[in-house]
Amino acid sequence: MSEQLVRCLPHERSTEMLGRRLSPLDGLIFLHGELGSGKTALVRGFLRALGYRGAVKSPTYTLVEPYELSGRRILHLDIYRLSDPEELEYLGVRDEQSGDNTLLVEWPDRAGGSLGEPGVEIFMEYDGAARRATVRALSEPAASFIKVLSGLK
Image (cartoon, rainbow, N blue to C red; front, side, top):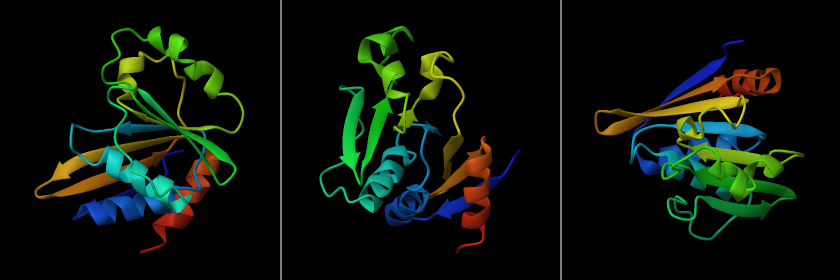
């Protein structure tokens, strides 16, 4: 299964809009990209679509920011500063992966594979002054969703 969606994102507002459109996704979602490539802006749009109105910043120092929205538990993780994948155990991340929780993970490579396989991977890249997002579905439900989303402008 290799369903994917590619979008050019000329400004932060378009990045947030893509995040809004992706908000029905759940489970484990990996966010890849250099610093400043738009990962947190995408998460902000995702959370806004679910009704969150507060500030959304990357949890660079706290590592995890939990949100209870629309009957869902969403965790935004930034594990860039993780020194050892075993630290995820101390944070209780494995326990959070059970049930219907959604985990949006920035810098998933720092976990050394201990998070398991995501249902979706999102690659954020610089594209001149803009950004480009590639959303790749790795599960059947995500592939169906991405296929529908690909038809929307």
